[in-house]
Image 1 (cartoon, rainbow, N blue to C red):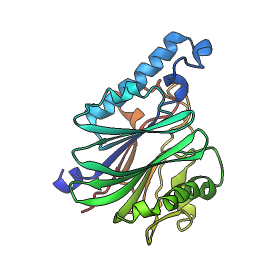
Image 2: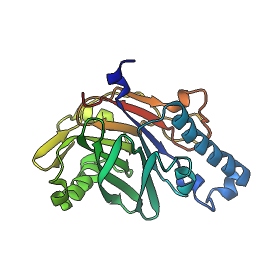
Image 3: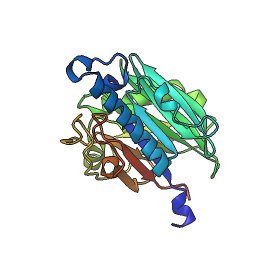
Image 4: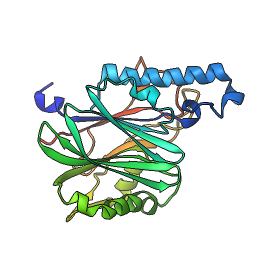
Length: 264
């Protein structure tokens, strides 16, 4: 692999199902403590697996209750992390601080219990600034009103803070609770965000992933967990349950690893 490809940006996303992670679990009576402990252990093993096999630059977790179990898997001298909240849900973002520095962090929510975190990162390799947004969207049909408009309102509310940055791209990763890629294909000019004087459109792409929702390790029928990029179509959105080391009986969502093009 040439050096340019090695510098591509990798983003891991995993909705880890709060009913498994929180203590005490509301599923304890129906599933039993032994089953809950097994599912939780498998979730943590999956996170370690992607860290050891792929070592992504970014980790985006949704429904990240009891998140100290996750952060202690990451060496504090190598990784930074941030926990956002829209009560009662937490959303966790982790990144490799050797390559990326967080210059601005803004918390927001689509509705109570559905948070998003907006980051302005500086890519220390290329000295370029960009936005990454970790989201957990609600179950609503109007994507413009329920995802893009709340994000835009948070950006507008903090527009003075954004003026100091020269944003080159916007990445949105997480649980969209819809097939956002297909929606952008259908209406490529509809979904945009504005920062400073620039308008960012997101590139349409087709993904056949099925990432939601089952605790059985099979039977997934929805493409909810994705990444969208304002610079180019993602190079890869890979369902990690295709890996031999992945424990499918874990969260009700499948973890995904996405790769987007670097700035060269």
